[in-house]
Length: 287
Image 1 (cartoon, rainbow, N blue to C red):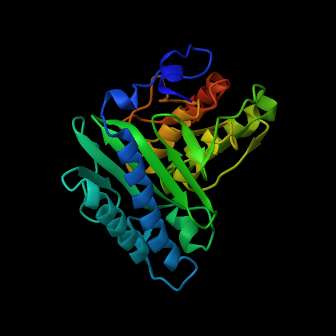
Image 2: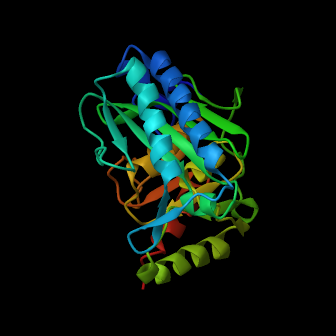
């Protein structure tokens, strides 16, 4: 999937995406740094996986571990070796929480899927995205317990070094969709409607429990789509969204407009089924 392909795409599938190379002249270097940083964080996180690591609560329903914090420090240290002055947007500790609209920055999640991680489930990942002027130009997602590394750069998207592309499924009965991110405990009616909207429209449903695994799975064709109506955090989404776009997919908000890091709702698909996936997402907030 090239930038030229993306810019020339029509409404039948892929969406127009600003070319990464037009935003910075060091896309290849940023992609390499994203990969090294994600691998560094994932290695630290993997050392604590399926161990007796202490689990702390964060808010009423979220959890965090020392592995999250140590992995984030490893990611940042790796980035700083090449880009010491760039802003960092990170989930843990005192890093900034919003993506700057101008200049270069890095959006990182040391362990996406911490609930899986602390339950000894392999579905979690370390995600790093390089952004310039608020738009991603490169991304890396490393899921060490699954043995998968996803890279997205100016030329396309890859899993373990091999090019990937979104699914070619065009019939809803053959499609599988994931309700992603998370609904607070007092919003379980929305969670239930998301699940109902999926199972009544599509052939099957999965809930993997880690957005930065779900999104590259859409990019690689393992899922036809994923939906949420919440305003997702950038560290949970930006890297995976870029992978989907570079693999030929489409990502919008609930109104069908091009998704950004500050959008409410996220609707990602293989492009061919986007209207149907979008309709399912819009059922979540219906009475």
